[in-house]
Length: 328
Image (cartoon, rainbow, N blue to C red; front, side, top):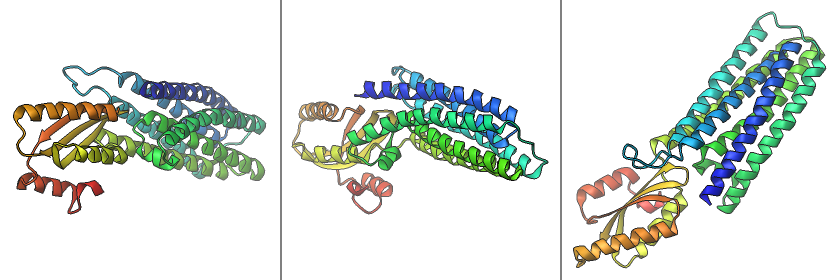
């Protein structure tokens, strides 16, 4: 299943890369011919998206490197780093240029438009190509969210594969951006005032800045070390509490170390009277059962602890608050 999802992500990114590269060239040519600031802003938008896809391909390739001595937990978080760079690219290459072009058009002399029909045709073609890429990304996220029994919004919020989320968000922004550019081009054509072209460019810049912020915040959380899917955490806790040798789950720590990779540390209070051999065998069996039940668990650490230890209890309370950990 994980291998299939990786293949789906790669195909989604490749389709987006091809579409954005073609669109960027067409928009740039149309922007130079028509003199439309909104069209040039959209060209910068598509250039930023093209760089983004290249960074996402780098993320997919490098994050699959196997663990080694220097990185014993693998390179899964590289996907989050390069995806964060993609968010930065969207802002610096797209949003800032759009702001510059917009404010220059609004407060400057503006440019006379010519060959407006070319602009309309290019935007219509761009909308079709962007729509193809967006439908591909939408299909993947809908299929995966349905497989997990989640709403689309909840799935995107908890998704630990930033490549699909980035493509979906940037393609959504691209479709809106094309409509904004069309509106700016049309209003300039109807009124003869470049002001509307500038307004469209500024709105495109705001749109790109918002997308960059949302993607940057997502990847920042994953790089810092986000907890695994709450449903998975609850299911792990439930299983551990049903193990015969376990009296209490004192603490349960999880961290996403990559797409479909989770590190688990469970501090357990075992029943009294177990010998060291019994305890070792129990830990091995429990870890094996966890690996079989939860395929995302990449590393499992089980630590025998007394639940009455005051220092440990204080640390757990400091992390989760006065309520029991299972409510978090």
